Length: 206
Image (tube, rainbow, N blue to C red):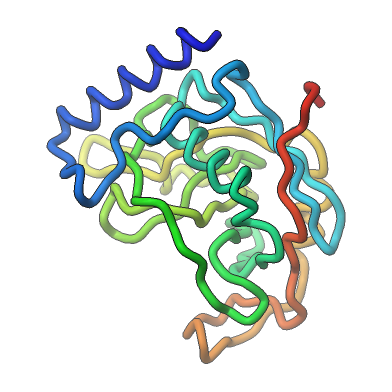
């Protein structure tokens, strides 16, 4: 299992290098964590209930490994879902309840060409316009968001897993009332914070 994951990460790193991504601005080969599990599950304990996501390291080795690094560092504990757009996505992982950001790893290589689609209840990485700018923020798709998939003309947003439990919790989060936040300069921020209390890697398959 360890050799399989190392091979996947090496292949991804070579693809990153082939894309001429500068090492100073993007992490082509992040440190491997939990090498013996290709499909780890992570429980997201939220203020509205638990969500379990299963990650696919066979299709998105860099992206899944990056997410696991943040989980193991407890980076996501006591953060919020700061963006809720019904029929589109719920997004979190980047801010505390005080809307403060935490220290991040280097941005990672964009694996959106891995064949995984932005289908309902999949989890993917948020990013800026730079395709290789994803760090800690993630989102869960609420619909079949084909506009977020890659095309022959542009990079997409990298999917790296799916919700396997707690779909009702995701839908409940999607239904909360939102409004404008001056701090974030955004109009889709929950009026009552939806908290991500703790993220934990499950020892056994869920």
